[in-house]
Length: 330
Image (spheres, rainbow, N blue to C red):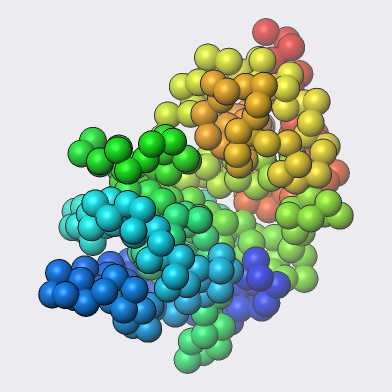
């Protein structure tokens, strides 16, 4: 595999580390299963979850620090939806069945990227605040980036007890989306590497360096290259997007220069004027902008590299304007 110096979203440089194959880790699911067994033997949920947290992986603890996840917040989430949480350890068996697909998709993704390498993914149990994210952990060779995937946000199935979700799914995804999330989050790692590491990395999460368009392109390009590598999409928001493409573009064009996350409904929350929008429809909007850039390029291989590396404001607007012009021409 390629070796390159990476930088984490946390603003720290990462040491190059070679992995023989993409790694998928299930230890946190196994530890949570042990916590459930302890509860069945009479231990209180709070005590059992405390032991689980103590035994959890460094990836879990890095995730927990970022999202302020703790024993109390996990215990509260478990108390609210015990049947849901009791089904989480079984996801190990499901992911294991699909592990070959995931590894193949990660290898194809890495081959597409101008720089970088895929990193280990850890399936963790948390408190339903966030799904997958790159995290920085300590290693023998120095700080390393891992992927933490909180399965409690990506575990709905046809048999899920929806009485524990009286207000709807709240953006939670289906267990069948777990493979896509592994690849998507690794796409972000490769985006970071392709931008040249920390020195060249442009944050899109502050008004100074970001915008609604920047978030759409960052997330949408990760969605698109994931699709190219695997054929997988997250959920079915693309169905709504394709049926309402022109109207969505008109709405997005009006807000794309606004500060990141300043307009609800696109990347988080609900837009009060568009109750019918699927969750995070802005990811699909970015997907289409990136797809058009790639499919219309004279040099498609070079365009793929740009999807990983172009995030300066002066590079983003031409992508969006070209996409918008294509809609107006039809």
